[in-house]
Length: 218
Image (tube, rainbow, N blue to C red; front, top):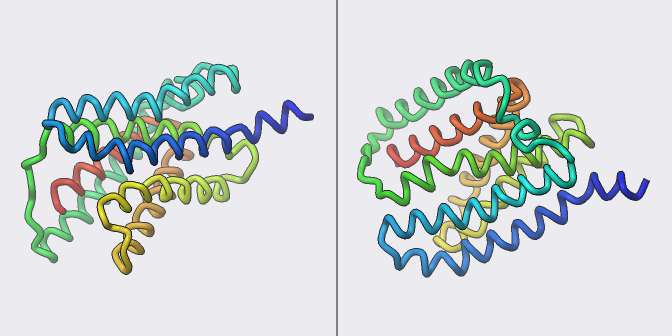
């Protein structure tokens, strides 16, 4: 009974440690990273994010769940089924941003540096979806019904953005409310697609596409 309870609850210990490490990166290390040129900053940021986000999850799945990390996280199966969900959700996102472009008359910005391409667009889908949908949501569904697990995961997903919003001075009313709502809704959508497709690749691609569109249109 003790081992079963420990196995169910260790993710909260993991998340607290993970959150603390990410706060150090976003609130302290970021000032030194911002002093670097685009390429060194991008590579260093990528290494740090992989070390904090991906590697611990791989070890936990291997040691605590006694499973193959790629299979457990949903990186080995249902790729084709996942692509169908990618097509539909991507179309909705593209139409949404196109409407914003035509209605709000926003400019398109193609001037993105190496660091932004690597970390905000290419790497973010892999790292963040491995933690939140592939691991946390997957693990929480062992204890809770899907929608409860998805809501908890989405709230945790919102919270991980707090440190960088605070650092950039974006934690101000009323802007913070729209940021929180957007991150929460995206978390719900990503979780729903992951559940339906049973493939982490679907949400990895959708997440990265969303960040690309945000970078281009805002």
